[in-house]
Image (tube, rainbow, N blue to C red; front, side, top):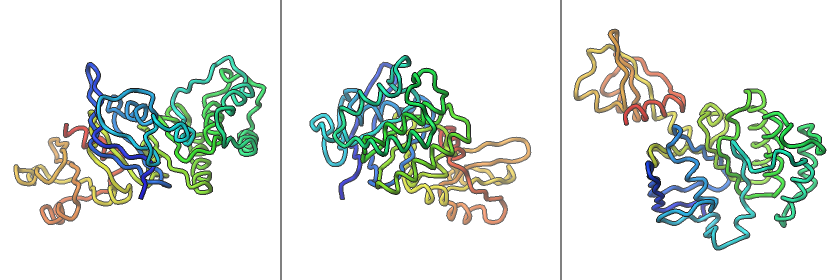
Length: 284
């Protein structure tokens, strides 16, 4: 089976940072959430996949092809980021005209439908749009090129919850129609809990957790109990621990195993993706 994106032994070194991804597969037709604290390597990874930076070692295949050798593969990727490259003083109509020329599958009907849905006036200047309207326009542009993959780098970071929710709903609607693959980098993990199928957690340049979102959430558990239950042996079953004068709470990656150790002497709570990210980060 051809993966949407496949990374092997990717290395990129900067002065104070090293990206080192041994293996990463992004499943075709699913939403993969890419999470990690700022500075973990999310944007560097996306730039490498999109052939925007040269990496030191490794191989990246997009739809089974090396993107640097295949122009058609580049046409198969749409992008929505925190900051986009559109000129602030350009009219939306002019941006659309100049960009659409480069895409053989450009869908004018879809573009018009989305612009009308968002109630965006094409005669406006891009820089005059609100943050929400900018993202809506960028998403309309990205979808209208009829991509097979949409790369998203913190697309909803500056949006209010209502606009964010509308953005995600539209994305999921179009994804189901077109069998899109979405690679979604964000620190707003609550968005991914609503829509992601898979999760990749990167920290300090390395992938430290990967799998189906529901499975990750099911396997992990926050454990709360009395301090006396902690010793060198029980600590081994916890990824990291927060302790105070009253007791402790910690995260386990194996709820079943933890129950065999702690039994009913502790409270078990289902974590959020943000909880999981915080505990793994604290461990390091």
